[in-house]
Length: 313
Ligand code: B4P
Image 1: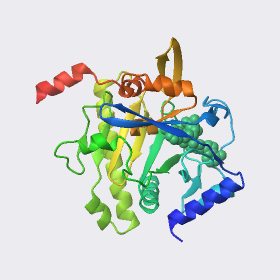
Image 2: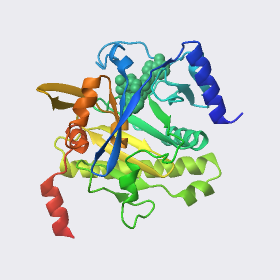
Image 3: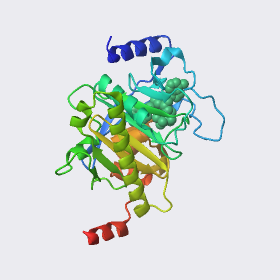
């Protein structure tokens, strides 16, 4: 049985037995700076008790000894489990078997397992919400993977801007000028990945690439943020890695004289925005530019640093 079939079977069974809750959703689109954002409305989530994101409150850890009905596969140091609160069918989490902190970066072996899941699942996106301001609600280390629609464009919306990077070279780190916040993005080398036919070389390659862009992100932060933050969002597909440093979890949007808080996690920066009420959808749709909403929760480019950079060239 293929990995995808295994995941699909497990998902249907867990949904049937109600070990997994699947929430109906509707989607609208909104274009901003060349990215076609998908705004997903999930009314049932408004009823879900907020996952008390207060990190000081003691709460059970769902990823230590998880419900077997959700466990898709046991690996050496990780478990692949289904997201219990699924908006996207077959949404997976790669959790460490032993407790590790979500505020620590993904290690090369975490990246390897996530990358294998991407390869085996078909077009998909891995993401990691790291640190208090990143949108994470669980403190136990987990990388998430969502399958992308297997229709005409199986890519996250942000890929459109990545494709526009002029004269792109693998392994080089770029920033995209249509994104009004600090970020780093890098193309992975398909040749190296295909040639890496053992676990160790792919693990080393992914680790080197990740820690390379993490260094570059901290370099950008030193030039643009005071004080620097240690929270960030990480996106990875078979083609690229991207990091976005974060300074707060919620963006505030104004609509019809009301202020609404939107929780933003990695998916927001990939081009997927979550709304829990119709009012939120309307408020999102009424924004001039969703990039400015994302800029609220990330780090603005420092115009002085940009000027110095231009002078150096
Ligand atoms: P975190 O990194 O800690 O936080 P998150 O993805 O932002 O999800 P959160 O839990 O904060 O919920 P939110 O309202 O943002 O990830 C924890 C993950 O573990 C989540 O996927 C969570 O569902 C899952 N989980 C929690 N308890 C579990 C358990 N006992 N067993 C297995 N898994 C468990 O989002 C609510 C839902 O909408 C989430 O499923 C989220 O993934 C999804 N979602 C968020 N943005 C979306 C978007 N733009 N489009 C579609 N779906 C979206």
